Amino acid sequence: MVTLYTHPDCTYSDALKGELKEAGTVFDEIDLSLRPEAWERLEELTGGERITPVLVDGEKVEVGFHGIG
Image 1 (cartoon, one colour):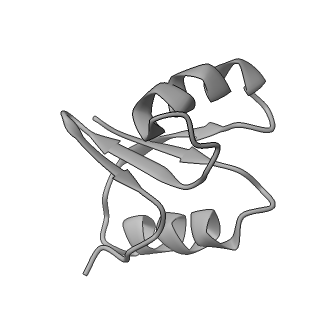
Image 2 (tube, rainbow, N blue to C red):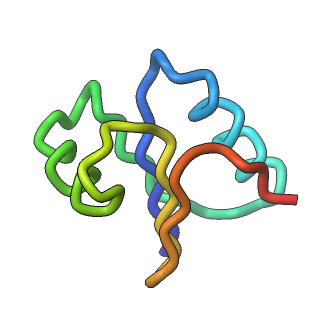
């Protein structure tokens, strides 16, 4: 399962969500504005950074927006 950490003030989160949907990728979105307790896990994934989006696919963690194609 792919997990995407997002924040509504982040245009890169919106861009990555759009690309994932366009590609037909099923993902679980964690909106950090609605689930602030998830910031702790996000910081573990990013080495202490509070940055979105963060895409987690199994063991692979992608921080920031780089496009999926």
